[in-house]
Image (cartoon, rainbow, N blue to C red):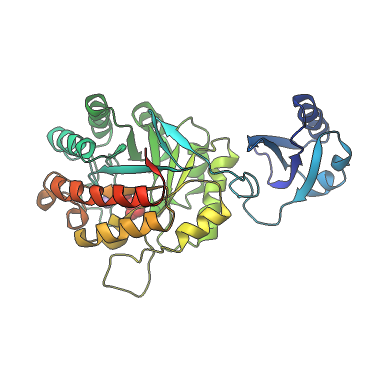
Length: 345
Ligand code: PEP
Ligand code: MN
């Protein structure tokens, strides 16, 4: 359903009752507008979507329980800090991410074989990961490169979840695969190359699974937030933003990790923000320093590629930690998570 963009926010008084909120929602509906209700920090906020002129003409300040009516200037609304002051926390399979909970998503770039993935899953679990990653559909630069196992890969991921208890994160590239991915995955990843695939964003906005949205290779912070807005606007407010490095003139790394994006996204949005140091750096030895920097900068989690035998990996071996390296890096990550006053998972 197209609800138009959110044009203003009605901030309710702490003492406002459910009837006060209901009265406003009914008034909005009769005016052909829609209200999205969000409650946090004792305060209820109603985001109002619809025709700007019609909404502006409603005497909303006059309604009982209303504290203030704030027009929205930013192009993104539902994902903005103004819309929700407290951090959103995303909880899946008993583990949380955001609001003081640090998520650690680890696993291979691609699901290659059952043995490889199950071995990676056990190593991820033993090393302290809170979720398992692995691509069954792979966006490869070359059409001749390994494209992923598809549904077979999803089935293997589900088996790994059974084995370890770790929730599964996997990429969706095509709305035609949505049902299969929803059937097996706990979190749906939208890759950097699809950050502005608007039909895909709207499709994942309509399902009941958190979405891990990666920043595009050449996307601005505002464009990332607008992409998240596409998902949330459809009703799915469980979006995790992921900084994974952007294209710059620098060639010493695969991409340039935009560490500033972490505090900026946290200032502008209530959504959790994680960092993927593996795709940012493209190199194993940079994963630890970039991970520590990310948590120190305020990230709510990390996504790290780890493979039982990186030298045989069908994709991204050069940036994949082996299980021993992963355990060493996670020990350091735990120290900095403690320093930040946060908890793992
Ligand atoms: C991945 O996570 O394996 C991946 C393809 O990442 P990105 O979309 O950030 O390149
Ligand atoms: Mn990869």
